[in-house]
Length: 105
Image (cartoon, rainbow, N blue to C red; front, side):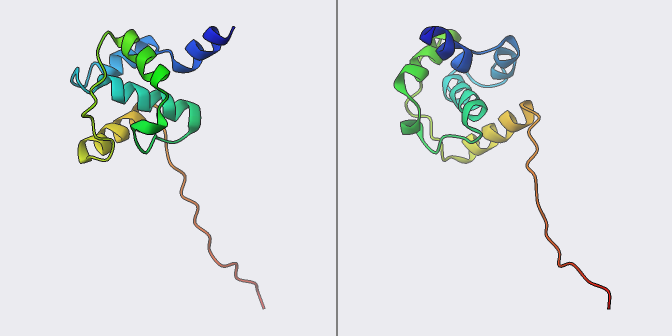
């Protein structure tokens, strides 16, 4: 049961694989981990240390690639990749604007 729950959270769908194929092979594991992390927690990991090594290994095994330890989560490229993830997920950030209420009188 625990393995099934782990797979349901950290497993990649067919559409995820299609999305990941847009990126170079070296960065796919890191991008996939960020995609799945965002789905689970509603935010991106700040750095690799936030990702469980078992998750990284499981995702890498699904993709059939090795994790690229040189991937920088803070680079401009990583920011563009995260924007692509949000677009893929159809995520729209809400902007709440408050305005003073004018009262008659």
